Amino acid sequence: MKRVTVAVVCALCTSLVQHAAAQAPGSYPNRPIRMILPATPGGPVDVIGRTVGIGLAEALGQHIVMDNRAGAGGIIGAEIVARGTPDGYTLMFAHSGPLAIEAAMHSKLPYHPLRDFAPVSLVAASPYALIVSPASPAKSVKDLVALAKSRSGKFHFASGGVGTGIHMAGELLNLAAGIRMIHVPYKGAAPSMTALMSGEVDTMFNGVSSVLPHVKAGRLRALAVSSAQRSPLFPDLPAVAESGFKYETAGWYGLVAPARTPKAVTARLQSQLHNALNRPEMKERLASQGIEGIASTPEQLTQHLRAELEKWTAVVKAAGLKAD
Image: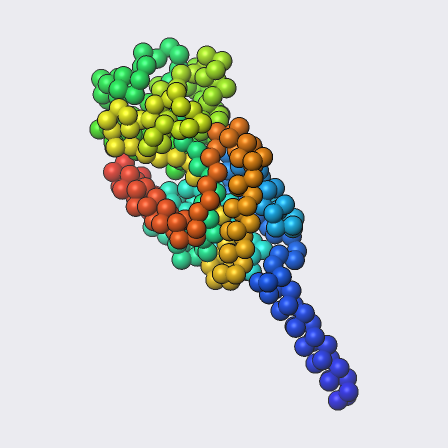
């Protein structure tokens, strides 16, 4: 019995040593990585996440499995990552929804956006475009604001749902311009653009990559972009801020891991992500989608997230959108 017990103990020790060696940061990654995409397939988070994921997988020399976990504004996917094993093999392609907007709207979430995630890097950003139908009398942001004031409470803006980035972009304009546009949520950005083109609503914000084909075809008119300055990708579109309003927002994306993920692991992810983003082919692929790649430090991502939380908390309070 003693010989059997010793043999079992030795085998167990050998297994534990091998497991520890396999998990050592220096050997990371030595198996496929799971990247949670907290959004539905085909949307901006999914498309951009998969584009960046392919580049990161090539840089790491390891396969990345993309896992769409949509629902509750991204909360479902974020909770999976927050509760994941902190070993670098569960990541989230994060965006403003679950880590900023939902946190501003809900007093209680199954995770804390700052405490329960290890930041890796900002990844990309893209401004929204403020759009109207070609039949609208608004030819500029000032025209639109004047029109909204003349029809206060009867001027409607669409979005892809309550708490989405394009919804909050409209609420931010309400606050910045002192107007009262009424929000009309649809089940996705595509149906909301259809509603705008048919005249059901008066205006909306949407991602520039989704908007431009319709603008070029004459089905929509773009008035401005939501970034603080004009986008180098769309230099002919003025920024909303050029009309004299304090206004800035954009769709942004980042990479996070569960809290307590070893810093050696997040450092390797960061360095290889930056390598991937700096490749000319990656820049071209993102630019074709109206996206600007961003390489940041984990600290910069944390600072950005804090600023987003502060901004959207103020907007949610002003708009009366607190859900609980």
